[in-house]
Image 1 (cartoon, rainbow, N blue to C red):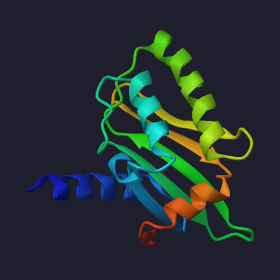
Image 2: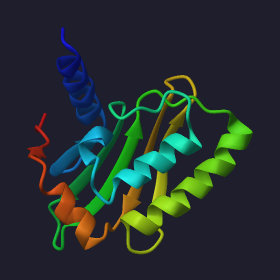
Image 3: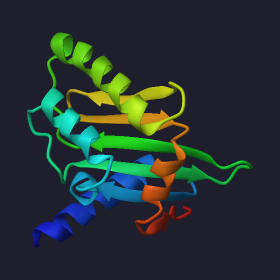
Image 4: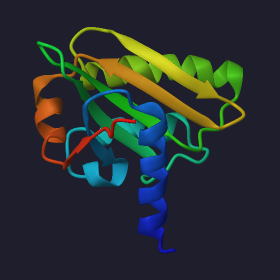
Length: 146
């Protein structure tokens, strides 16, 4: 299996397990190079240098079919090793920084911070219009119904 196929399978497994939205757009960090969102990834790697990479760190825009549509930006890393004390303080600092770039307001959820699975999932609610526009340049995906 080539590397691109491996990552595509990894992304799809995450999406099948985690998403309960109607539509989403996927942007692995490497796809955001040369955009205003890439500094968020760079800050993430500076804050947590152990095993964060531009393939295992993925940003998503999710959208649910409500009126008006509910949108969020999800950031996930599938190999997040952390040290509880120091990294939790750094995580709060990163969330504050990323919120200023990604969203209106300050509604952020730490959906998963798992030391056994070594992953993290952060959800930033109410993305800025320019964030939505950027994500919508990527292919839209639809959650398959069970």
